[in-house]
Image (cartoon, rainbow, N blue to C red; front, side):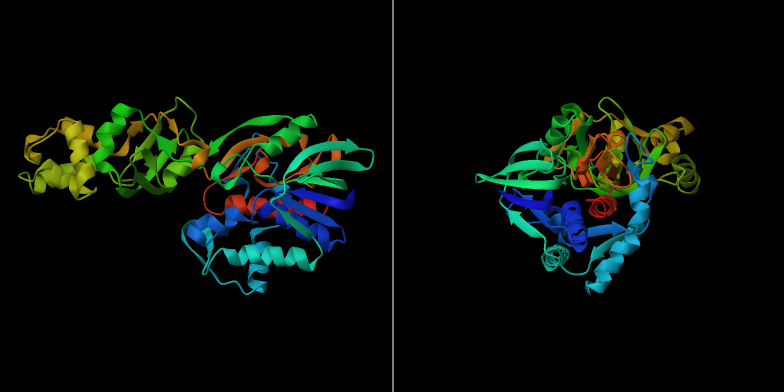
Length: 393
């Protein structure tokens, strides 16, 4: 039986960061993953350019049953720390909107950097390797790994991610480990995911498929100013992905299609200046033509501006900037970028990521009930939580 100080399950962002830090501290580290390549989510993120962090990462950008849990890790290993790592490696990057940072070149640069750092510090990476059984022992843990090997370790780190994107091999294995050792789970569900619509509404909206527009999507007191994309299945785009993390089955969301514009006042002014202009033409000056047509037809409003009363204009205003939509559901884990929920943070030490009831068992990254907004926040949580565990194992 092979014996090491630390076994890390999962060679994603969090797992590799933890393995690097633990190995730097002189620990013997084995990191295993059932996938055939490490860091696959890093590789595909940001259209292959990896949105690897966000300049504005803070507590405000994360969802959790315990919103304060992430503070310690984010402060101890910040976005500036990871940026420094990238810069030291000579990886060029650029900032896009909302503080999002992307590689200038392929995202594989980051994967190669992390794998290289693991190897240089002595960590061993075993891919195509599944863990089939875990036992608690007097000195730590014993793991059965395919194809029939056994590994003993003092510390076990679970960095196996959530259920999102199962075609890449995502499973709920991390939750199974947590339950095995008596830790509570906040029920997982897809997050940062497109929303679907009921067939009747979807049929009405089908002519809009492919249209993208900058909007404000709101749920309760939470709102996001980002793009909306109409699809053949429902609603997508950054604004919808963001609000999906706050949406629950049966809830409505509110879409403001021309945020910051008083549609009633704008149309009333247009009526005074050019009453012979068709309402659809006037609205098409503010919205894509097909969307303007959809709104006027759905309200059964037609004719010239001069023919329309203030009441008509107010109805159009509400349809444009207070459009209330009740999604039928989401596209699920198949397209969800992350998983909401996970290992209950009340079970973990926020400084080390260790289980309070079992101090040499650690949970990091997406498997934990900490979920970031779209835009590099989830990677920063992976770097931060992985770094913290790496200082403790």
